[in-house]
Length: 257
Image: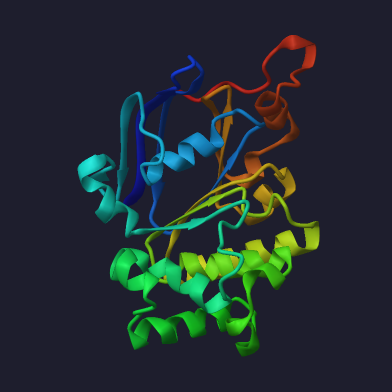
């Protein structure tokens, strides 16, 4: 089953910028798919279309067969966990409160603001905090007092609160050091495999993409220029992706979009 489907999607912003150009891509359930590309290639735009934060100018996006559009957004978003580059946590709130925010689609904003989370969800938050390598004492600590790696662990715990079938991770380790980056990606991959979660993850570190991805998709100037296994991502492929082709000639045939 294809969990994510992008059918000839294109995005043109009001200033005329063409962020994506006729990209077609199907990501099956349980796959860890990494999107590579330089800044401005369209990686974040592609990811943000999954939960409706960016609407396509053309083409369609589907999550588990459901077209992403205004009338379906509430249901679609309840099936997606988000992990952000800048963590997007509430610094003054505790670890427990931030993780519980991952259950907002189920309990609603009003109940969450009053702290009215059912006991099963509170237990789930505690279990997830332990699962991401933080101890019980962290539950009551404010997020602002944690290291970057610890904050991203909280972000991963929050993303899995409702056991979503899809997790979108937009440059989740861009602000972390190499060792912490691997720890966080190890954790994300392990949690995803335990639950059969589909992961669409953008990265700019080629070595990490080769190490962690089941599949690599590369974008350049809004077009998909590579789609294949990490083993096929040779230096010549990267030359095409990042624009360093020899003698001015492309070193990889662009995939059809």
